[in-house]
Amino acid sequence: MYKFVLLCSLVTANSALADMCFIAKENGKVVKQEGECEKRHSPFSSFKIPIALMGFDSGILKNENSPKVDFTEETRKNFEPWYFPHKYPIQMFSARSQTPSSWMKYSVVWFSQYVTVKLGMEKFQDYVNKFEYGNKDISGDKGKNNGLMNSWIQSSIQISPIEQVNFIEKLSNKNLPISKQAQEQTIKIIKLEDVWDDWKLYGKTGGSKTNGWFIGWVEKDGRTIQFAQYLAQPADSLMSGGRVAKEIAKDNLITLMLK
Image 1 (cartoon, rainbow, N blue to C red):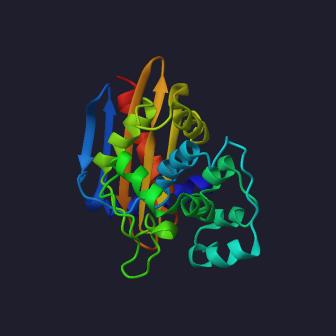
Image 2: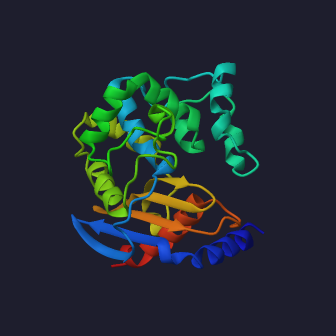
Image 3: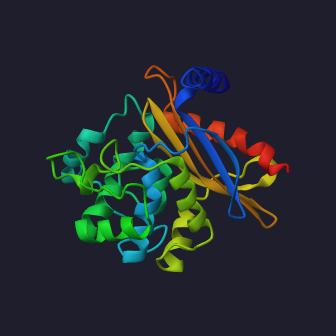
């Protein structure tokens, strides 16, 4: 049944491929590029990767299991504008205490906000500038002064697939202008399941019902392929855009892995 639902969703998504990009790099060179890869979009939950880097580098996050942050009544009230479990069932895992590892695994919005609020606007902006992340605009919704809470959720921060893959390339090589330890801790919590022929997969999805990201890299036997997948899809799609993007990206990687 799951495979049938996934297939239906992917077929539905293919009707919207006019706004889609897959780009991959290996050894510093683009090895595959398809679609509109220079257009910027909201990063959604793919922005959890830079937030994790900020958190570990600043000391807000200690390791994959610390801190463990309680889901308080105040957190519940603040989280309500982003809580849609009927649309995104995975959000049901959000309403409980979280660690850096569970935050990334269950894509918990309020834990991202916990980190950014502790950083404050000045440090937040400084990190975004250091990462050369997209348009670097953390102002949030116009006139609402909410950049710390949702600038990356269909708001002011915008980034293209080309910019995403360049950012991921730096992280996979631990070449971002922050501590190596912060990069290593972040890499640890974005490790996903192994894929085709036991390639190790690292990455993060992001998106909504109408669009999706999957960014990351695969590595095996000294080879590393960084990638970014973006797609737009109809609002009545059966799966969130991020999950669809992940499956499409995995298929797009096969020919590159077999070279």
